[in-house]
Image 1 (cartoon, rainbow, N blue to C red):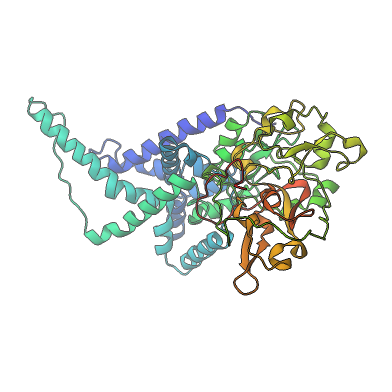
Image 2 (image 1 turned 45 degrees about the horizontal axis):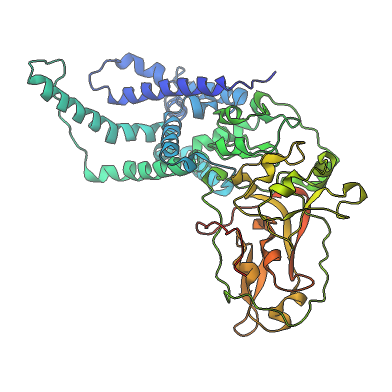
Length: 523
């Protein structure tokens, strides 16, 4: 039994909002409305305070951390989304970032900072076992939230209260009374301010990155959640790899191309279920996944997918200035034939076998392609694949900002693919043929391939004297064919794209923000 209703997200949103308001009121209640007897029940499920109280005092009523552990083993990291006030506050900041600028709400899959987060967890646990609690106190999410409320929120509330009290006093209304605001020593604001800026920035831009990188409680519960009974899962028969779930995942833990959820980082916010238009995401009991020979052949575990940031992906490509902005004309014909092992199937087609088994060669994608890179095949797919579209990079290139073909296919041979997901879908890998390159054969500066590479997978490195020659980084190459199309050598290119039998996930290039690739090259 699994749950697919988007109501799960709304239930979580309402519940967590009430929890956040309750904890905020707990700290700013300067009139003592709640009363001291209510503090215990409210704080019972806060993990670190409960754990410390149990370890230090051995109080039987301080067993909330055990309840949280059991809850995590049953439901995953629901504590982080439903109960932790700092986690909920980050969700609010992240949502504010999305309202401010929509791209901040697009997260996307990112590789976990495994070494860093487990180092912090081990350091915190080690110091705690030695009797020190300072590291845990600094990093405990509940304590951090409490400092925010105490140092910043409560003075702000008191300031507003005093203003209203003065205003109402002029009308002889004394429902509110003035309360003195007593600031703390200046040095005491250093840590709360630093953490407010750090957490605020990370939440605004990257969702739950702080929870999954710095917070030791989150990392510990993440370890437990690997054994949880209930978790987010894919319905592989319904999933079209459109990428919407990854865009909505504030924990950046969904690798949609491999249909995998990193449960150690998933906080069970149910955003993915709400965003999925195909009912392919659900929340339910874990079930063992049977490995197939196909999965083994593709070695899916070796393919890492970085998104945020998919939701964080900001704009397309920046043209790299190579050795010369003018593309030279070769004086000699190239001699080494392009040894292409596989053709390149269009983005959104998942892979050659999937594409050819569904494509009826209606050629709607061919007519829709603005760069004419999609061409009918002759023999590339074999006899049975005649006229089925392929990517011909001698004719054109796949525009980095375009996903038009993924929207027009009537048979599902090309699945809908969001532009952010398309930018990290690797259709193939660029292969450099040094013996064809005019930098090597004619000792002439070129760099056309590097200049037009949208991800900088193709870049120039020192060669001879002042000459530079291309080099390719496979992990960030998306197989768009811009390098092959731009290469001036004839009849064979000095660089070409060899297709992936099954599309893989490229890494996000570690470069500054890129500009959009023009629809036509300047030559």
